[in-house]
Each structure stands twice: as structure tokens, then as C-alpha cells.
Amino acid sequence: MRGGSLSRRLLLLSLAAVAVVWVASSIFAVVRVRHEAGELLDAHLVQAAAMLHARVGDDVDESELEHAPELHRYARGLAFQVWDEGRKLRLHSANAPDTRLSPQERGFSDVESGGRAWRVYSSLDRKGRVLVQVAEERRARDRIAGSVAGALLLPMIVGLPVLGLLIWLALRSGLKPLVALGRDVAVRDPDNLQPLEAADAPREVGPLVASLNGLFGRLRQSIDHERRFNADAAHELRTPLAGVRAQAEVALGASADAERTHALRQVIAGCDRAARLVDQMLTLARLDPKRTLAGGARFDLAAVARDAIAEIAPAGHARGVDVALDASPAQIVGDPALVAILLRNLLDNAIRHGPAGTTVEVGVQAVAGGAELVVTDQGPGVPPEERDRLGERFHRVLGTGETGSGLGLSIVRRIAELHHAEVAFGAAPSGRGFAARVRFARR
Image 1 (cartoon, one colour):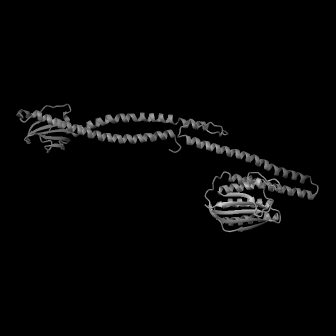
Image 2 (cartoon, rainbow, N blue to C red):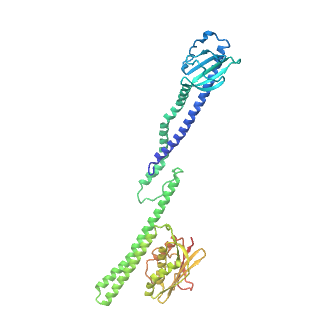
Image 3 (cartoon, rainbow, N blue to C red):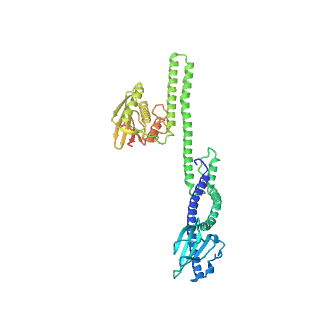
């Protein structure tokens, strides 16, 4: 029933529950009717035997040997015998055999006679001379019990479709708020992410409305965030592309080889900056949809640091900046590829701001509750009032003299969030330079 109608599903479940109760009630009713009917008919047999005792008395005339008349319109299902001294048949009904209906002389018994099943009640008078046996055919009893049971069950059978219709109408009425909610969502404009009205919603629908409103709120924030990001990205891309175009025009108009070569080098540098910006934007676009890490592996943070330094060291040497590693084994759980991206962005930021002839120091150590990564440069550092804004997209610290998009530390913060790690920016221990600390919790 997956994907089907909710009202139909509720209707079928309700009818199934009613049917189970109905069948159980019917079985109980039939069994009870048969029992009560049997008790009532047994009482009638006892009463009939008493009446026969009163009529016959102790002296029975020989003329009464003739068959007695039928006493009831259902006489074919009833029979009686009156025996004298238990041996002589003095009186019997037209459908009674000439032999005793039951060998018992007192109480009830079930016997077979003439191919038919009988319920027999036997009774002796006080002197023990006159034996009266009153019998009722089992088939007649079953017919009476069946008639009574049928009279009870027929309204229930006829009422089941009516009950189904009433349940269906009740479900339609009860599900109207849910249908109205679905209609409201269906006709909404794609740009309309305002909360749904929950004042008139039933209590059971309240959690659904609250969840939808929460989803709309998150979508609204995400869309606003993407719009700001796209606007900022367009602005940031415009600057290097304009510079590339300007340098290309200079190269086209240059008459001297040295001037043309310088302009072309600036074109290449501008292309590199644009490529780096696009790469960082793609990295952020890939990270943003991730709310949590899918799984995670246990790995050594020091090993990842060694690989990242080996990859970025040539770029540092080209700027006259060395990279030194002081690491001890430190196990963490996460995505080693993302942690490598985090470390490369920290190293790239440190190399860009570190003066030539200085060293970027990378430290990895196990600490209580996890592991700590520290990247320190000997650059101008960041004023305390600016540190809280580090990691905001496209935010750059003025006065550093370095070009960049401001996305590198945004990537660092996002990867740290995915790993439930803490990021702190401050001054280097020596008092000059900048230090970035990332503390990973052991999970």
C-alpha cells in the first residue's frame, strides 16, 4: 500500500479491525445462542415430562395403547413415550418408536434412533412405576438455534457496508485539514518560502507543519546564502579577469619585448589567481551540501601533515619560505582527504603572508581528548579586532599587501565544522606572526 491513498489505507485498516471484532463477536454469539437455546429446550423437555406425569397418573387405561394425537405443530421434531413398570408401553406420540427412546431412566441423554439423533429426558414417578421419556430431534434444535443466530447476525452483515460508508465519510472529514495543507503547498509559488499557518491545524498535523516550516526556513537561508555567494563570487572574478584583459591589451600594444614579456607574465599570474579562486569556490560548493561526514576513518594526522607539506613545499621555496614540521603520532577520525585540503589552505595562507627567508612551522601533537594542529608564520599577523571575521567568505584583512579571495580560511572553518573541530586564530607564540590552531576531538 506504499504510495497509495491515506484515506483508503485508514478505511481498509478500520474495516479490517471491525471485521475481526465482528467475526469474533459472531462466533461468540453463535456459541452462546446454541448453549442458551439448548438450556431453554431442555427446560421445555422437563416441563413436558412433568405435564405427561400429571396427565397419565398411576392408572393407564388399555385403550390408551392407541397412538396419542400429535400435541404440537412441530410434533415431527418432538416425541414422547409413557412406560408402565419400565416394560409396557402405555402411551406414545405418532413419531415415537415402539422401543424405549433411551436406556436411561432419569436425566438427559443423547441417542440415535431410526437414523435420527435425539435429545431425550427420562423421568420416573415417585413410585418408580411410570417412566416418561420426552425427546426432541437434534436437527430441530439446530434449526431453532440457527434461526436465532441468523436473526442476530443478519443486521451485522447488512450493517457492515453501511459502517464502511460511515467510516469513509468520517475519514474524509477528518483528513480535510491535511488535504487543505497539501493544496496550500501545491499551489505555492516556488519563491514563496514563508511559514505555513499552523493556528487552525489539528494537533496531530502540528508536527508536520512545524517540520515543513523548519524546512522552508532552512531553504530560505540556503537560497539567501547562495545568492550572496554568487554575487560576491561574480565580483571577485571580475577583478582578476579585468586585470588579465588589461595586461593582454598592454601586451598587444607593447613595442618592446621586455614590456610585452612583463605583461604576459602578469596575464599568467592573473589566470593563476582566477583559477585558484574558481578552485576554492568549487571546494566550498562541494562542502556546503555536506551536513555531516558520511562515515569516517581513523588515520594519523601527522602522516597527512607530512604529505601536505611535501605537496606545497615547492610553492614555498619559490617564495623563499621554508616549511618545518614538528609532529608526533596523533590519531583522529574523519575524512583524510578533507583534512589534507584544510591543511593545504592553512599552509598556502601562511606562505603567502610569510616574508622571504622565514619559516612556516607546522606542529601536530596528541592532546587530552584528541589532537591539535598548529600552523604558524612570521608575517605581519592579524589585528585582534579582525580575527573574529577571519573565515568569512571574501573577507580580506587590509594592509597585508597580499592578494587573495578570502576563501581559504572559509574552507578551513567549514571542514573543521564537519569534523566537529575547534578553530582558533591568534598571534604566534613569539609575538610576531600569525597562528592558526585546529583541535580535533577524539571520537
